[in-house]
Length: 88
Image (cartoon, rainbow, N blue to C red; front, side, top):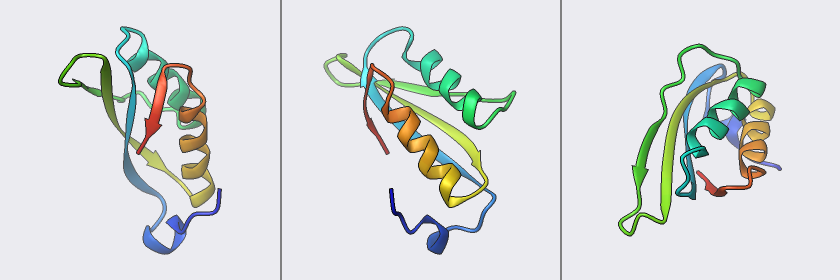
């Protein structure tokens, strides 16, 4: 992944990741578990919003990222989760 995050952001910083996936009760836990592996924190507080038809959930979560590579790694790892369809 070759992004311009380092040109646009001053690291370390907080970034909100929005993960959209299949509406399943374990989606928020899977997102937090993935983040704990790559950016450990005790205060993750995901916000979950269902889609209009209820088939998908959007999980927004604020994460402290330390570098361009760290941010790219988080995007990549979240996208690998089975229930996830998009990471913004």
